[in-house]
Amino acid sequence: MEIAVEDRAVQDRLAALEARVRRLEDSEEIAQLIASYGPLVDDGDAESVAQLWDRRGSYDVDGLSMTGRDDIAAMVRSRPHQGLIAEGCAHLLGPVRVHVDGDSAVAVCHSLLIRHGDHGFVVHRATANHFTLDRAADGWRIGCRTSRALDGQERAHLLLGAGARGEHL
Image 1 (tube, rainbow, N blue to C red):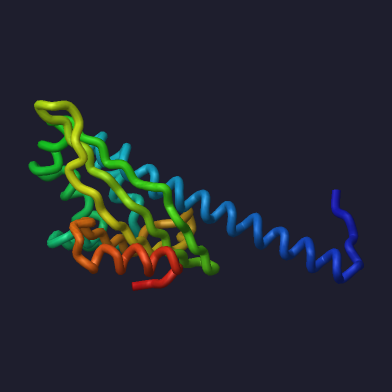
Image 2 (image 1 turned 135 degrees about the vertical axis):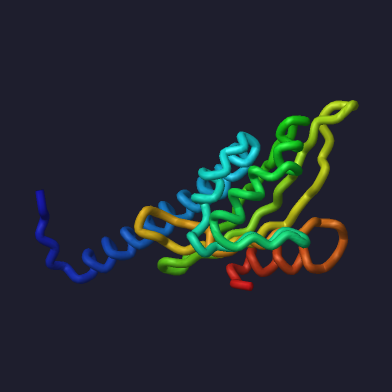
């Protein structure tokens, strides 16, 4: 049932509400996309991990630079990553701060790599993550993920600050 809306103020309020709902839905979709990385990469599901990225998307993590879905899938299939899975590990990301601007977005979060060892589970790495994302026909995809270890060097802190302010790198 369609209701005729003639009052300009009501039309403006409705348009503003629709825009707010769209931004909230976009933010939630992006947060869910980023949150799915950990379970998928710990499962070793290379194809699903790669599908989180745009076809030409990139992932730059401290000395390892990947471009395109094939490179990202190869990382998940790699001997080092498969070794992490076999020994027991968990990649935890979040919470995520998302800035949506139309069909592009910036997100930032911390992540932890937890590994199983002789004395139980231990945090092996804490990382700053900066994402740029773009809306695709089938939903949001990562265009670029840049990750740096939180090892006291300024480069990781710059990622966090830029992402929290919604700035592209």
